[in-house]
Length: 491
Image (cartoon, rainbow, N blue to C red; front, side, top):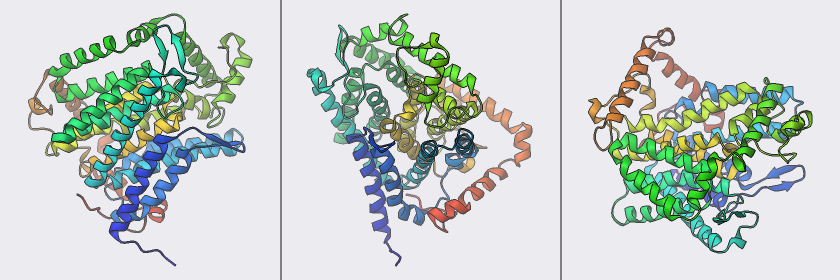
């Protein structure tokens, strides 16, 4: 018997699916061993959220989903991952790792459809902002009583503890808070009255909690995200932003001391360099298909046994670089492809934010989210961000949200709608930096339009054909329904 749902019921199910995923994963993300496998709320929650969203997605169709969410780089990454599974012995755990990445791509597609509904989008962003601030309150309690954060205490005389919130590691928590700052920033620039004041309070709580994690990589990611945001809005605000950042460094205990350790020749900085050397040796040893998806620990052990001079005091450790880790697991090509996928996912909000005729609310939301997504990518070079499911999940949710914000624009990517003049590029007025960005973009656009590749693709016809192929593929039509290729409703 087929279950028939009304449009309202399907919409409610999709909302419950995404909100439930955000709340459950934020509250608890520590993995639990089930036999020889590790299970967590992300592994269980993502498929359930996708299933709850399916009825709504089937009604709206995939006609508005940008092809880049499952473009050539993503498909090649998954294909190469599967080849790596076969080449390294066909371990079931490795296959599940590739399936996990595929579920993230699918989640981003689902989110890009559901979040086109402005009401659902607003509720989800507020939910992320409020829950992040709630974890910050817990983090403040942990800071006052270091016994609440066992294992993260006393890293230096100036730092009594590193808060973890509802996460089980301060690095993971900082990565999550980095993305949450973009959400609260988007709310601040798009809400009015009391809601704007509330979003500012939430943002302040999130930023202070992030400082108390004492995670330098995420601090750098936040700085990069803020720099991007301010440059696009108006570079003249940089002085004020720099002053606020300096105040935070001086006022929050231990921040200045932690930053001074970044250039030290000993301690965590030297340890991380040693880990990168181990990852690099693993990549050089098996550059084609790696040691097996999800088995960096095996690669690590093999390297330190074969090269005792690289031993860092542990027989198992992460690479502290998500792309290095993937390259060691499934080969160099797999790591490069994943970087392309995630970089494209992260940067697309900048395209939306600089289009003519786009609603200002959409522009600010896309810019704020894309800025922190790029900052998250920057942090990835010092941490296993995408191998941390609890925090990494929010990258895919926000990336799907950015894709939803660009509905109506993605079909014009080859010939983007420029702003009327270079001086109008900024959201809050022109600036030298914005004119420079505009000039560089025009240069690359002209190079692309005069290239042989562009001529071969038929000046935009290929883009439309690719979209038709994408939305009419057998697998996606089976999952999302026969109307997947049709046009979707827009709010």
